[in-house]
Length: 344
Image 1 (cartoon, helix red, strand yellow):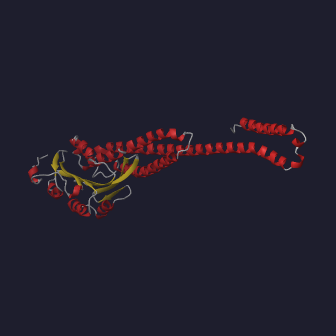
Image 2: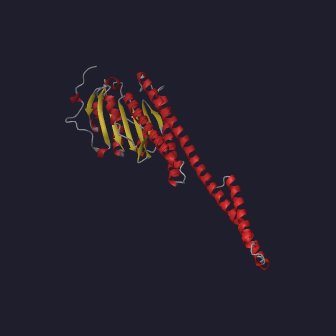
Image 3: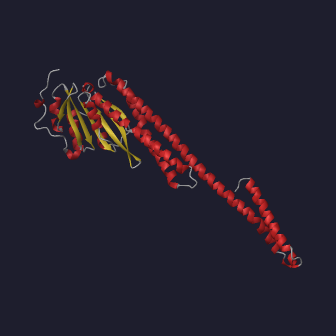
């Protein structure tokens, strides 16, 4: 491959792309052999693409309309894709526009014990790779560094950058499920505690709801990666099909882990509610037992008190202690019967 003079491509001096209020995270030019040319500005993209053996990797974070329209002019992006990237809040999907791909992937981070969701739009062409991040999403700088450490793979162009970013997104799902599993193990002590804790059941419900949302983000991504392993030969190198199959395995494992966690959370909620109901029933049994023991002396004394003129102890001094012993015996019999039936 003929050497390319960087002075004919890059303006001097080349400054890191930190303009546009931090919306441009990175804008880097590469040769087709995977070697890095350097950071460039958005305005210099057209100059770089004049050289036939180059491609550009652009990373944006919540860009405004003007910046997206500028990129549309530079890469000839489709109007509908630009509209989706600007509005965000799109479903996970893959669209083909001519010889380019537009992919929307949901992202997730664990923030303060809760899952915060974000979104990344990805534009893939033969000469460019653009990521647009919205909401909770880690920077793709680690994925970019890993690519630059393997120039022979990065030499396959934007398709390897696509693999690196999708793999980075999927790998960030597993720690979330693992942390939720560890938290569930810690909550087990509260689930089987003697006293009811309202916060425990609330946290279990919140975890189940967040995992449901996470699953809605993961399942469509599984279909997208499956499509990338088979289709789009003009963008995806055959040598990279195995790498995308590896992502598919990771997504499948994440999906299975989420499903297992949701079942565990559902079982934990059911067990917690069953234990609460059981505890309430035990209390009601004890209250009913005490009520039965109190009912016997109440019945005897109330009936006894209705016959004041014929009260036995008026004529027989031993009658009052006898009635007292009778009441005690009745209460004792009731108590023994309830005790044998495990009401106490």
